[in-house]
Length: 341
Ligand code: ADE
Ligand code: ZN
Image (cartoon, rainbow, N blue to C red):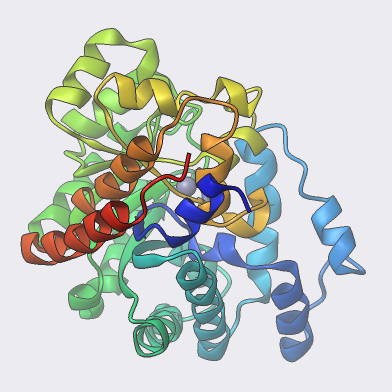
């Protein structure tokens, strides 16, 4: 292990952009398919992995929604979440705010409560096993209607004390944030925070809409903001957190090569960027693999890595007190782990 990899391995960090359905490893997909008697269109784990070659977001989403079909029971959701938290703990994640897509499940006849009970059981197990704290972000699928999002918000009503925020994901182009203006306002009235995927494939205008119409507290991806200098200046001025996902960006062809990834430029422009894994089972790595991929072959110093980890706590939905405690732990690590070179 290089010095930098070892430093990343032990670096305390928060993960703010990870879809729990995207952490379904092929091995677990097979065992759940067997447990539930579900047919999947693959004969082996190798065949599944070989199918994970995407040329854009939609290519990926098509296979991701199919994979989720093996998730049927509360136990399945619990096992899925517990497996993610085991991997996250091994990567020194101390806090995670995870996305889930209820419509992917309720549209298949799985009860909203089954999803919630399973995920919460997994989160509780993670806290007991690893001391990891976590929060849930309910994402609306943007290729569906705002009316369908409202129906999901109604189903979430009894669970609002266990849901921190709403988000917006799935096929971006053609489904601008403004399509969900009213349901995001309703979520805000219920005390929920708001995040949205914007500027992954969609234009900078979608980022403006996420800020001005959805009033997001955090922006997921945001890469294409860089095409609009006034927007970059605003994001920096407002210290808006960007949840950036390097390996996802590479696998979905948002960037042509990791060397072209703009994470270093984002930091230089004063943006509050963070590093996250998005859909780790599909994109070839969990959060530390993303830190390493971003750091390799570019000028990211240890200081930059600490800034990225600090940003992850600052951009989280933890209380100010909890943020301070997490950052104190990070500073202690950074101070004690001086470079050998
Ligand atoms: N759902 C899961 N991963 C996603 C991504 N990167 N963009 C949009 N929707 C998603
Ligand atoms: Zn995402």
